[in-house]
Length: 371
Length: 98
Image (cartoon, rainbow over all chains, first blue to last red):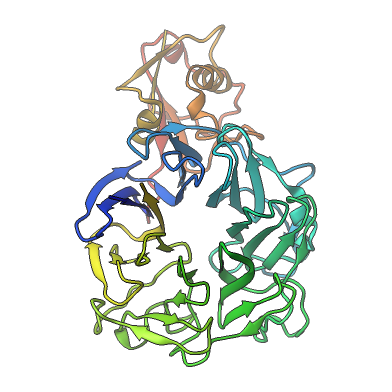
């Protein structure tokens, strides 16, 4: 029978949660790297026991950890993230230019085909690639050439948080940056252009045609349709059917179109999930009710999924990397909260159960289905 | 032989149990001690000082013989008591919780 493994990054360590294919009873191991912030962990699709983890600390900086046995043991690999050439400057809050400075790795994206290839999304925003299992890292500097001097950090920092790789077309890569927007490369990361047409951010960007500066929180795509993109923006849930050439809003009947994560059902490319949050000044669910919203129509028409989730007095947040789906049938959906709960649904969101209730604040959740 | 005490998280990272003894060629300075430390424990590169600038990370401090050496130039000689191993060099994570 299949096994599901969840990789959970928290403010104070990493946890590995495992269950059989029924996904009812879970074993919890951890904390790994106790006391450190684990921004993100992800397994290689090509070698699922090869895991990468971004471990960081305000005191000791950035570490990258790698496991080759599914998280039982770990080895620290390379932690030198050096911007290529003269790092240059980006926009600062007061309108002046500010030097690029490496702070941390927000997201790790292993290659779909080669376990030694992994990409890292950094703050200050940049994309790094390793071809030797994380031992050394090289920046893909063309990304910052896409009007990087106009990018400006948001309240959470200027981090590259989403990396979408395309198994059938490896030269095409999408990344998303807070608060710069979506960028696309069609030559495996050498050159990049902004892919933000149709995004409206009227309070932050008076220019309705602004190419960059959009506060994109997360983008997602189904593996079978990698050029159909879904986005949770600061405000607005958006969709592109044209590989980011143009976006249109699909917020429809959501109670709030603010939020952080967005994900796509493993077997239904038009079924998507979001977690509405009240507003950018009140980072908790509307009315104290924790509700996942599911659209089976690729947006616009949404249904609340509440069975098993707290429907009163709930004031947690769900961060951008803290939702995941597994590839079993029925599809499992998972998310973690800033209150330390990790919720699981083994039926595509119909019913939910907490796997664990009292972890440190959850920063990221990834799911692996193992044979 | 010099003695160096690392903060808890760096001891865990480098799998060091307790105080560390370190051989440093010539009269020890902060720079030469950190060079020797990082050569013996490459995993510590970037955790105490920046990879590129070699500047001390902001929330780490250096103490020895009841003195704060954090703002000493990296090439300044460490006290004789540290050089002889009579006193340890303490690398301390600052109390910066707030």
